Image: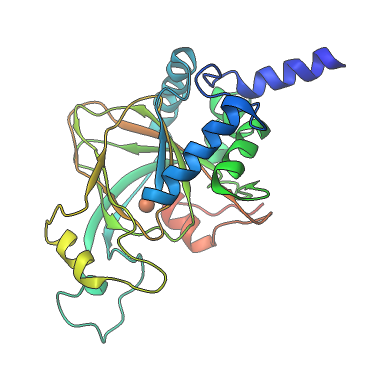
Length: 275
Ligand SMILES: [Fe+2]
């Protein structure tokens, strides 16, 4: 029985560099310190990055799975304001609420990621789930119940970009897999707005090209990024060259049973699937 339990634990964490990141023992010692550091980073700058989170072996496996799946990515592109909403009429021209930037990228839906794959094993790991909950200061997290959006490969090819925006979710978990030849940098202005103050002047300055407060997070394959994007403006700069920029996106929620709207599914994955 114990052996079975040990094996199950090993399967759940086989992709993770547990020597560097002891996420299976967070109650004390180095594991507790790690959680503390992640919480501090999130509080200070809205993101925490763990370089080399997955092992070299797992990274190679994940890249292979993402490359194999990428021809099945649904591509979507268009124009959007930083607030990801249909702009209201009353905002003056040039205001951030009506300033649109372009986005284009592809997404491989969760149901196209094979059962038994390294990606599924990692996403379905309760050890990882509990670690992330601890970092975010949540009693409990749940894997996203959306059959398409729970876990994705985000595929950006030559010319793709994701313009400045704020997320509508509290946090995003991503694992960098494959770097493009150039571009594809993740850039953010941490905590540029708050619940009490939209700070439109600062948002407008960033949209106009100011680098004030801007942080560039280098794309390091194997890194895990835990990012709170609701108040931190961010973008992915235009991708150049042959290699696709490949990222694994892992979605969780503080409530069980959360799914995306049919409209969001249709735009992101080109189809609708209900649980
Ligand atoms: Fe975002």
